[in-house]
Image 1 (tube, rainbow, N blue to C red):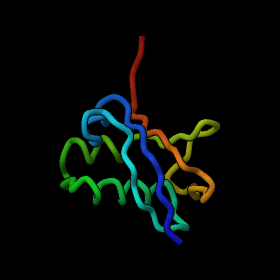
Image 2: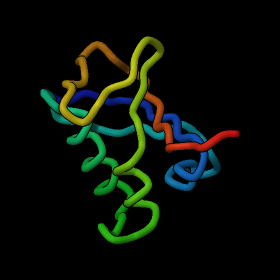
Image 3: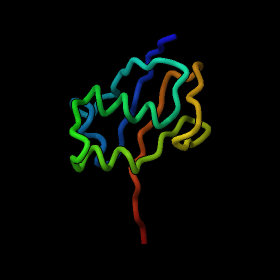
Image 4: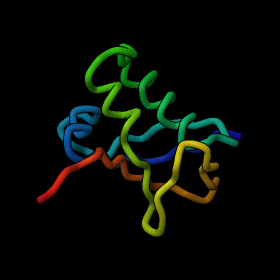
Length: 90
């Protein structure tokens, strides 16, 4: 089964989506959060050793109600997800 998920990219990951707009992505289900990151990298033609690809791998994937770790399955019912890069504060 394939679903379309709209990705909202924050911080340095905003460079993945044209003009900072939400980015639609076709995803084959079942898929984990790690599978989603691979699909994003492919869709954006990221070289594995690029800074943006490395940032994507360190980033969290979130919905309105939770954060998904790499081993979590992405529910078929989700239509929007956020890409959240690591941040530091002080």
